[in-house]
Length: 235
Image (cartoon, rainbow, N blue to C red; front, side, top):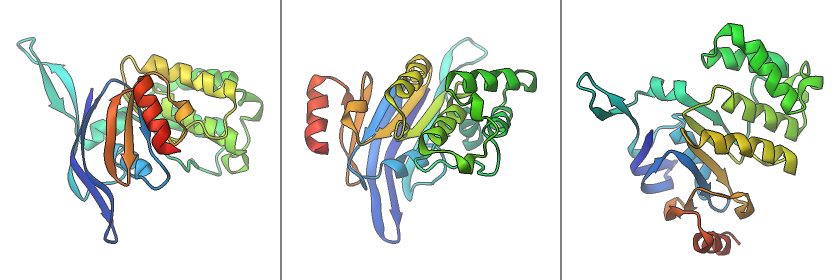
């Protein structure tokens, strides 16, 4: 899977939020980092097809085998992209009146998991994230950390090829972060994973894309030198 941004610009009410972004993102974890207001959430919404760029293009492609057993790149349609995406916005609410269990069962079915497997898969996630005892509570009654876990589960439950998470670890404790990070590391072998953050310490192995007032200031592998450079900019 490959994600290509070609001169992507986004404006709202005459204000330019993103300015001619161009880069290619492939399988693995890419951290989208920048100060508040740098355009991180806008970029992720566009990658998730929730927003359309004012100018430029965003293209997802994957390798497919033709009848001559030759691999070639195929562009994905919007519907194909949405079927393969797991997305958690920064302000996740879900369907507020539904219980945790009913909401996750609905999302699992909606994302194509066979109905005969949905109950067991949801049960496993609830048990492992300590949400099972409160599974019948409505989403609108949950604490910030509990709601964040529900948002992460619904994004990851179908092992998406494209996973887009906007500041996913806020309100989670260290053990909860470790649990979800372990899944993301596993998915990174076959999926594009985009994680936005303004906390440098959350970045581990992967690539880093630093946004500065709507343009790409840095896009490189995450090594000691780039880590220190980003830490200096963010502070």
